[in-house]
Image (cartoon, rainbow, N blue to C red; front, side):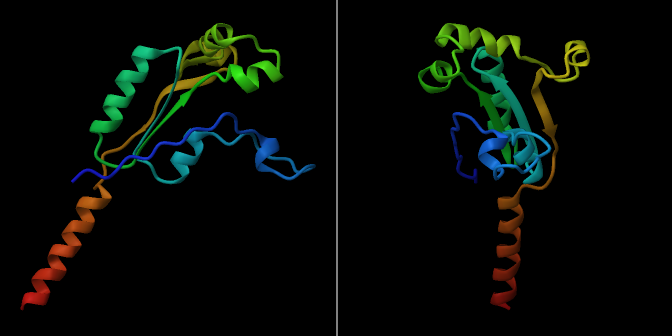
Length: 145
């Protein structure tokens, strides 16, 4: 049995949205950070610029037994781009390439502000639904005695 999938979309998450005015935070909330904290056994990030990478990561996430989260960073030319003078869809798409780098790359060492993309967590642990089904089976066997 395969658990159902859930998809969420967020235009932008920033410290301004997650903390009251005047409160200092450690940084922005990210999908990767939330997924790690929630115990996901497969966590990855990519961008809309890296189309082939999206396909590869999504395939691996779907085939992974367990809690999988894939964060796909995308441009928002309609609101964010226009409001912040980031350009149109094409310019913002190219920016996805420029502001990201593969996990552990030398570019990240040279430019710490770059956002890493790739697979952050890949663990093989017992999957919740299959473990829960085992508990149900044991309870049903004990009930028949």
